[in-house]
Image (cartoon, rainbow, N blue to C red):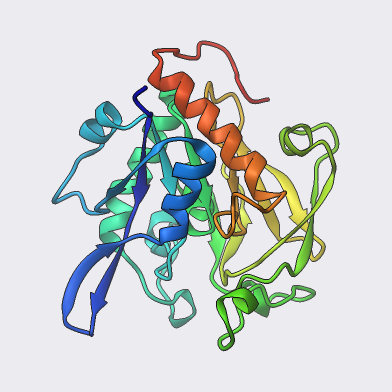
Length: 258
């Protein structure tokens, strides 16, 4: 049986500070292949090499991955500052319109970390450049040193809106997650529903109101040990079902998420 195809958005890197490459974390591919049951396909995040219409035609859904570069503040009407960090304008140029197209078509997307932030910006929202500088906020960045296990350590609770999408997905209102991000949502886009928060008030889970398809996105990194983690697995399973439905020819005509 042919598996549905999930386009995994890559990030640009310089290998050995010389060789340009598009790369994606192995754990993203593992989560899509082993938990979502789909074929992972790495997408070069640059409009020079692919366009939105071609991607929509060839993939059944998209994983909007995390990444070190941030969405450029010009995309949400603010000036660049040192606090905004590094950028990937090619990814901005490709992925933001891709998100808007998927939302309107009902084609499934799952946003992770930067992908979570991209969904908010694509839908008209804004970002804080450094949330740890805000009064009362914790440091959500990953530890600069230590093992991979220490970087992806479970560090805080996320509380979902009562009766909301994420509570229905998990069957509980509070889950514990890792945290590896510096930026966060400042203002949610007009259709962005923030459905879960960290204890310090940082938005951690969202979906798009009145979207006909799957638009769940999270600020944490569920791809880490997704097959075994009780918070990660249901999210990737639900995404996999949505992608399989799209691949089978099912096209949503009512609100799938509300």
